[in-house]
Length: 90
Length: 454
Image (cartoon, rainbow over all chains, first blue to last red):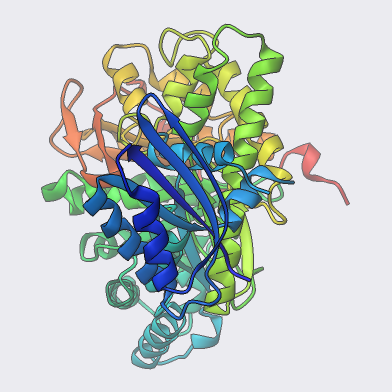
């Protein structure tokens, strides 16, 4: 199990979730949880995904998602979950 | 389950508050490289460093990418070269050859710095120690990435005043040897008392003889994160202030511990320690001085500064200790002048003097660090400053250090630019009264009474 956090932050527009989910599906990444809010027109989404089914090297996925973000006009980050659990849980 | 607020908090710390891992330092023992032939020794050293460190930089980059946390420096520290080169080097020139080998190994492994061009002479000097110390000016002027340190005292042994006298002269010679380059060599030379074996921060990093064959040591950072956290509790009492620093230090250290473990696992090299230091950089918003000012000081250097620094140091340690399984190195807050924009500003506005800096070193993690002084400062005065600082370390059982840069050709009122992480600094006046007769006595200052704990 390779839990990964994908965050998308930026100006809201139509189709952000669709584009991100399409990319993940094409790479055999399973989405386990999504939470999303819009604050003052700003789109803010966090996904917990499982990348263990994907054959793509992790670093490549990080770069491709960043590029996808540039295309849509939002900031997409893809980080291993450990950094958050370690920082916020004892 | 992790929630969106926690994720956003972490990413905000990284993006806006400059949370990063300041350095991954790979410590390498060179004791098994010893040989009586200088060429063989150099070859052994080069081969071992490049073999163990070949994946250090690429692994660091990979971890940065996967966790989204920047790792600013990748560095190497080695066994003090005076120990390694003792059998093969009969002149200072021989040691310079080893410095060149280290520099080449650093370049070929693409690390920022390599530390360990060092001698440990807290009680006495061997001929090898003396040769190495005499070779420092030449070694630092003909290499780029090599850092040098000399440990001249400890709580257990007292202070080696012969070495203190010699180091005053060596600092000056190094300044002269690199005068074309703003006496930059002195920025890579530090004189220590109570030097730890596992410090990952330059210029004082070396891989001590108590260490394993190789170890991954990590230096966390984040003055910016602490500053921002304190902005949110402005005006609250000291309990709240301390609690806030502690909580922040915990989170920062956890991130560091994770990166250290990952690096150790991927490189197949045991994890050594996490150093809980707040190490500033010259960029705005990454300053220890700004944290102290956020606590309520008009400027660093004002009355209250030492107390604020003591509080900061202690809370950083308290928060960090629980976050990591092994804590070591220097652990505390660094107060270098040229590398911290807030400190530079305080010196420029006349709030922060040399004497106040010395007082602050009683409670900071290291000592008088990256302070530019007039180029005509006598060697005996530099030795006197080293002796004062070593005495503070010896009596208080803490690490202290001196990294002064007598900038040849410059005087009070001038500014010196080092560039990059080393920053820039105004030349600060030093006390003009002499201490030559004191320094020229030579010999040793005995260990203090409280060192006898057998």
